[in-house]
Length: 536
Image 1 (tube, rainbow, N blue to C red):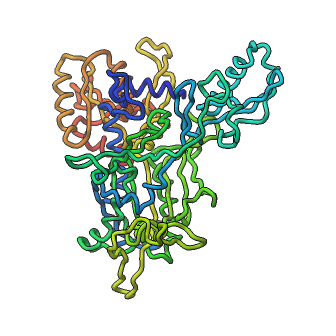
Image 2: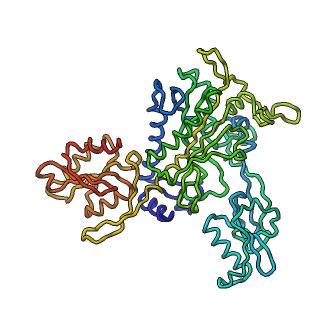
Image 3: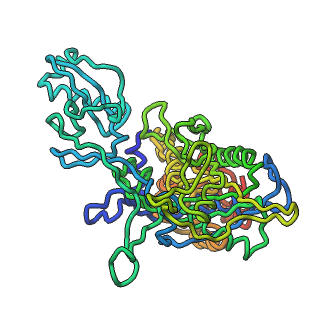
């Protein structure tokens, strides 16, 4: 599948639209259409049900070190600015950007790739803001144009090695920027804080300065004590949250994969320090299985442990669940979810102040006067175990998933093409979404074969009985084959057709989206039949 095929389907069938499209669009922002909002809601609800509401608080889950509880929160998007100072986002949540003085384009420094090439006695670095085969083609064309060579003279270009990041280049004077015609047009990299800044209150000054949250996690940490005091949960337990986050990405790209507004599904799981390594393995493996169980192919999914140099300064271990998105080159994977062992970093930061690593220890960062650079809340965020009579700061395991990236991955995996006979028996291409029934926007569609002989009345009656239980669709317009195709394209698992035999024996035809198999059930059994398929 080519990515542009999926993008076209998403727009044609109402899954995703460019935000503010009638005004030219706004880069990095997307609107979910009628089908998309249902699909994404189903992804969120599957996550919440599987991770939170169906969790058995009494028995040990398969693979878990002990029984545990789960609960939820829905925190404000705008929080006290001190939250982001103590968490480290205010100082450290940066990417490096570079500008091109010629094209006036801006790029994220670590995402620009390129190759060294020599021709006509000159050696230059040809840069591209794409990746994989597209970057190789782009650099080839740019080098030919720069050296004023025709395609048939491409053998005069002496390339040195594969694509490498621009971060490996020390002198930009010999760099041909991604959209430049001359050398040396790129500026030196500079830091760019990714948080969206805003103001609260009637007066705009330093005291009114606040931020849209770049992640949902911090709202859970600052409410840790509130949850303990207002419920009867005991360590180990998890707090889950689904909500919008905002990051002012320098170069949003690849459809909804990298956006400036996105939705997260996060868990902060609090546990005893001496059991945290086991809980990290449990959540890492459980979250990987969740994607497989909902339809992602294990061949296109992988679990990758971070190397030591990749880990955050506070992390005891992190694994990424990654998917081979079609916009990536062969062998490349994009992050779906990160599962991090955060130690006691977060609760301690909000108690004591911003923490940094010194040797093997996390200590409070000091200013030039030897005082805490950013003071914590001073509140006691430790946990007292009334059975063992111990007091400690819990360790945290954080499975952090993107609802938009998960939705995109399920769409990519579901996109399928095959050949089926049309009304005249000729083979014709069929496009359908092989979505898991739990995720499908519409669970079943109900059709009368023709608009006469009482068939529409029976079909409407079946539709009305199904509607209170599932999101179902009624359609009586056009040939039934075209109606099937429309439902295939949005991933509807079952189509129920009222036909001539229905008038004789009260049975209807049910058609399976994936296999095209058809069978008959009594019209009064349709609800149970759809429920059976959804529970698979």
